[in-house]
Length: 560
Image (cartoon, helix red, strand yellow):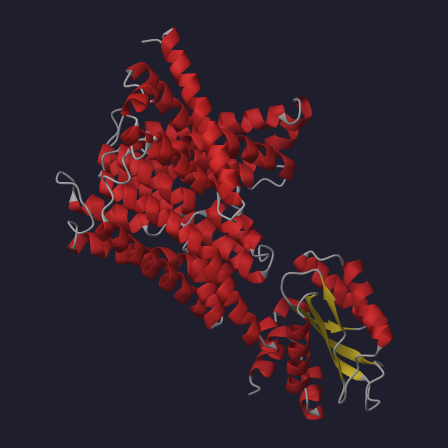
């Protein structure tokens, strides 16, 4: 079967219209600080059976012809779009970041998957009809799908939200991103297994054989393939034209991984996602390359996929308020409580835990991809598909305002103890305060990637205006910089350092405080809090005798 001249005209005209409307509506919504993906989905709803199809059915009939050849072409391009979208999502996963965040990210990811999965599975298992199960659908598979659907987090939307709130490179930002990465990895593995259960294996493979080979594929790509990619990337870059050669290699590997997972009976998107993680973890992959492929996919192919969502069903005809409300309640309860508990048990404050919970609650594009694939596989009916799309949009739109609210409350309650970190405490041999300021500035530079010279210059300028030495052997050199959150570095001095203190005593404990330049009140509050913690000379002397950062933090935390 081939495309006739008429088919080609219809196909190319449709693609042009879809790209045009998705961009126009997306850019319009962006002015109101809404995600462009929302505009792309709205464009599909407008062009599809919901609006244009209902008002002008003859236009819809021409635009989305029932010609099987054109439909196959559309299926091919949307398949390419979703495979490349997951490949790009995989490139954003930083395994080293997940490892660095350790306990907090593990707890948040675990609770952020297990709790909403349990909530969703339980609701679908005991009340399948209320959640819109199809008449011919297996209850177990449907419950597994609902649990997985409520557990997925949209990594790209989360990253965009953190950037908009200026907390992407803060401690809480790193924890949220690392948790979302781990959460997505587990979620897509589970969803792929569900699709494999539906298919029952392909190409003569039994389900158990597919699972075994899928497990081997994951282990090989993430542990061996990752090292191979890291080894060949710089060599490939030297012998090919940049950036074309590297982009070609990434797409070749991504499509090969996608083809292999599809052969296993697991959807092609999973193979692309795993390969993307392995390639993205390479230290040789330039940020410029990531940006090029991301722009290429998100501005050309992804819009076609998201517009096609609105073309699939009539959102008014298949809108079921009861199912939509149930999915929204389950989504918010499962994710916010689950991730919030994980963060709280990981040592975060109540406000920061809720910030994490609402940050992880954003479903965005990934939920829509998952819902679309389930709908195509016959796992869910139109009413559930519409509910999932609405749930993804609502959770994404409410994420940023909720996070901003709890971040504001967190700043009001922030104190010195919340900022203490054992890797920002040193036992210094510095001979004078300038040496110590240089040492603490360098420590912050290493741990937080803030320019050492800028820190040192700002702190030293403030020090020359008025010395920051207080009484009893305490000094608090400080400055306000263009940073997103306050930072503290502590120096326990082995030598007596003159900070021109109020009582003339040399400093034994030096706390460097850096705060955002727009947060004057926060700086004053933290300065007062630090002074209160170290108000007795005996306590400062006890601290100066300690030899472990953990002992210093434990000692300070004992203070009432």
